[in-house]
Image 1: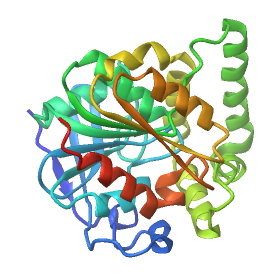
Image 2: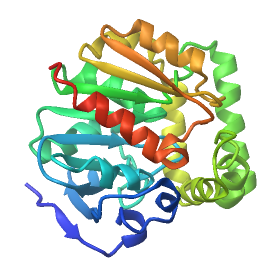
Image 3: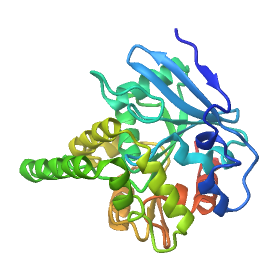
Image 4: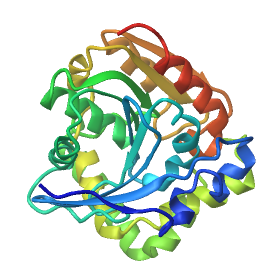
Length: 295
């Protein structure tokens, strides 16, 4: 079996919890530097950032993110935990999809790391991936946070779904990664977001390779989170941003109501990117939930 390769410091702007520009506005951080790692698997290389030791906590970014978007959480959540923030296929240092789906690659990676039980936070499309993960591997997930969860488009009429799919592909083709990020990266944030947070969100989105984004877009178009929710049978927390237009609070409440054991929290003034917009407030919520005694 392939052994993880460690790269401490070779991608410091992505992985240093003490030095990431987007974290500087959020208050004090634990002085933790996340280690950049890779592993070559039959499905392709997977890259991730890792910090801390203890029970594993998985961070799954959204369609416009990457492992480095979790910089603040890699520092704040790592006391007593092994925090792992993966790069989805085609993102960061991870190889593009080739004949398998995102969740297949996620399971292959977790199996290679011999992780059989974990807590997890899924942002946006990442929330859908966690629901798919729970269906594919019952008992894997202990406590789950669905952060700004997307519903997916699988329940839409086929004609409408296809029109949306093609429109986004054309928009990315016309604008290119930088123009696309400039248009969408800042717009998804809430009214309370700082200029630093907006610049950080745009930079993170601009760094996403087009091929990785489009593969994730296809997954989002095809998915429907609602029928998957019963698989998330353990304790769950749904977090929505008051100003989130992509995953509005009404959707968050509906998802929470459909989950067997879920709470709901609304973050005032926050849009679709709490890890960057309000990292300290988000970390407080995550720690309170993850530290609860309920199994």
